[in-house]
View 1 (tube, rainbow, N blue to C red):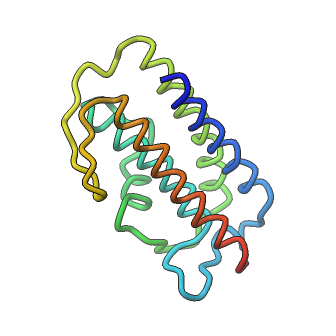
View 2: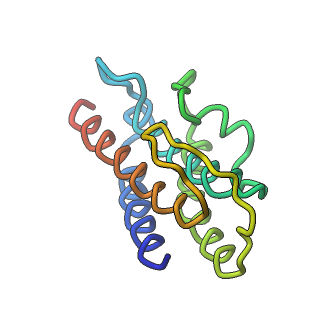
View 3: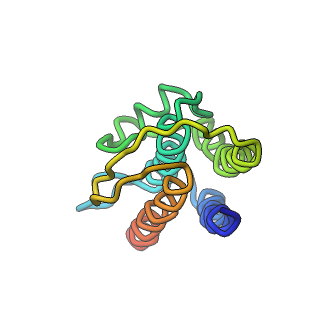
Length: 151
């Protein structure tokens, strides 16, 4: 699990750098041919990790229900994110992973509801969820890198 968490942290640090590099207007810009923007993709990976790891384990998530609704799978930007929202996402990028690491060390994830992902891979435990999360975040990092070329 240490390697999985290290991969997650590496990705989150890259996302943190992207948030710092672009203006609020650029973070909210949806390029032609795309259905979302930089901030949506970054917030989406935070929300998805919480859903895959905490919700499927029956534990309280570290993000609000409102944030889940805005950034869950199938959602799209319905408004421009404010600077306060960007700052919240920035803080959650690493704090959620820090807490996940603590909770893993304390064996907090004793229950897990199996979940078949959209790729057909079935998550059976928190280790599967974190490994799949890294795959998922990698997909969105690729999308983010592409969107950056158009803003």
